[in-house]
Image (cartoon, rainbow, N blue to C red):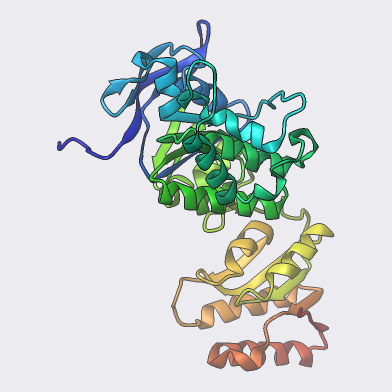
Length: 374
């Protein structure tokens, strides 16, 4: 196999743990310059232990960590600081330091014995603060910043090291949605622009799917799956890994629905084209069991319906509406006490017309139909 000439960081048969207690075994991962590798997995699976072993904070029980073809343990402390930068969850103690002073700490691997910043160091500090949008806090006390602002400052400090590899441990855990999106967008942009490899552990699967070039699922003492995000985060593994109810994980979005309502369903919902999803969730919140249909399997409502409905009358993607499906709906309607329609039938062609005929049959039988639309 042709040797990979692009800068890369990899582990070979790495076993990690504390003392003689093994946490993860036979870890074989690789990330290249410009790529983002995301570690996912439940709490306690060993993600942080793996990251700390990768950067040498913990000794490996077995195996080797390589930067290109050189063992990472052979690097001097200064060489490591120039190759890799780390942002861990442990808060840093700054006493009284300005934002600029905290960011400047990232330049110390490049300063002399006395830690004096040169003109190039100061230029890099200024540029990095501008890139991470924290220049306006330059003279602020670091300890007075919000969690989201502190994360940006710590990212800037790490970038000041001009690393080839950036490692972050759950950097978005305490951030609000706006800060999460802004932080990860910035991280993605910098990884590409600076040709920097990134390894980040995350709990938010939906965001991991968006940012990661590759994902490694850490679970039950090993890497259960490693590869493209779309391949790793398949529903069965995620439900097993996180202890989710069957069919609750929606793979395309990286999200999970809550438990479906219990009991005998007495409600039927005509939905489709994404119009029923908010109503499905309202029924779940009020714990009202329901059936729904007729949904095609590519329909926007289908994943949520599958997760929350007691029964989904469905058809394969792009197949024609069948008399069998219509008959099944008639049978269900006969035992339903309440019937809802979220689909604006006038906008959806011949299939909707056939469903409209069903609704007319229901009305003739003096069943109550409620139109529920946002």
